[in-house]
Length: 59
Image (cartoon, rainbow, N blue to C red; front, side, top):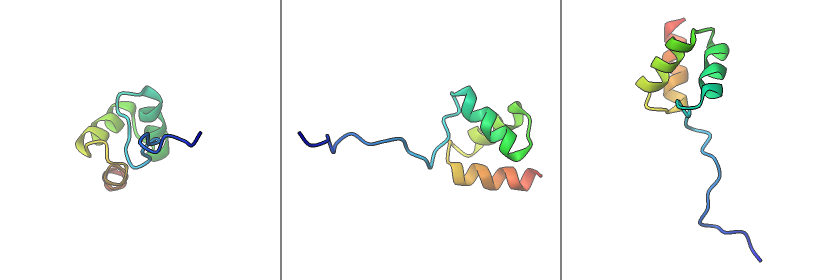
């Protein structure tokens, strides 16, 4: 039987702010505290591209 085309995989363009490992990874990647990383992710609305841009501005 063919795969169910209505089910989509993970969306790599977003950051799951509710997942500690996502926040930890983002914080390590940008050299930020977990609190600062969580704030940036929330400010960006979970959009990975926007969050990366905001983190670069904070450096």
